[in-house]
Amino acid sequence: MKIAVTGLNNVDNPGPGVPVIRGIREADDFDGEIIGLIYDALEPGAYMSEVASRNYLIPYPSGGLDIYFERLSQINEIEKIDVIIPTLDAEMFAFAKLKSKLESIGIKTLVPTVEQLTIRGKDKLFSFCEKYNISAPKNYLASSVQDLYKLPSELKYPVVIKGIFYDAYIANNFDEAESYFRKISSKWGYPIIVQEYIKGSEYNVCALGDGEGGTVGAVAMKKLFITDKGKGWAGVSIEDDEIIDISRKVIEELNWIGGAEFEFMRDEETNKNYLLEINPRFPAWVYLAVAAGQNLPHAAVQLAQGKKVETFESYEVGKIFIRYSWDLITDIKKFEEITVKGVLNNE
Image (cartoon, rainbow, N blue to C red; front, side, top):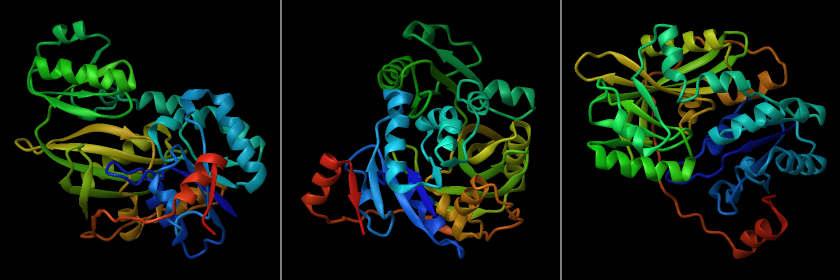
């Protein structure tokens, strides 16, 4: 049994790969190897010997699906991979489009369909929420700086300026909005999302959909510490039926397949929950769900293999995760190995 996982960039804005692997490894019936798929030679997870047996450098999906598939095929000829669990937003469309080709060479995946990815996109989410009577901040799509002059009257500063894939900033006035617009568009392209700002506390749900409208499991978390990049650096598992129910409703309406993270903001004045985003993969804090009693990464591997998976009915409330920095010391020869050969063997 060989399982490949992406997203080992365990930095200040960590990818979910390392915690996903931790969950898979800790399953009672796991008997196999983990293969790391990395986009950069300095992804820390690749140098952690306890994470993956071997790590392979792969090209970014933006370089073209043919090149991407060719590299995955080369790796598969060596490793004979059974399942790939992608964990990054920007690669989900690539894996959705390559699903059948990957299956033709023996690799199973568990990823949302192109249609599902499109519907839950940051630029489409408000319309989806309106259709199903789910509260969400108002959105406005901007494709040029000039569009910022045309913001609807109901959008008052401060507003949130968001990229189509990543990055979000609170703009208190037009000058800040223009600056963030240019910064994000140069990195992630268009459109840029201008979103109504909701002042309150952040809550998240980590969940897994079975592709038939069912929710295999879902764990709610409240952020306790947020970095300057808006990432949760500490959080606690909580009991919150409302945001769990909203997450289940979305999974049911979309027939969602695979991991997902639902981001909510609770208005400090009205206590109303607003759905901010649906991220189409497990979050970087997914190991909290494992620790609380729902090993969603392992369940995802089982689903990918076509196995029947029991639904998680509960989880432990009051589990806290706290991230920390640790200097990992390695040898320049390992860096040279991954850079020159495209593979790093940790065995």
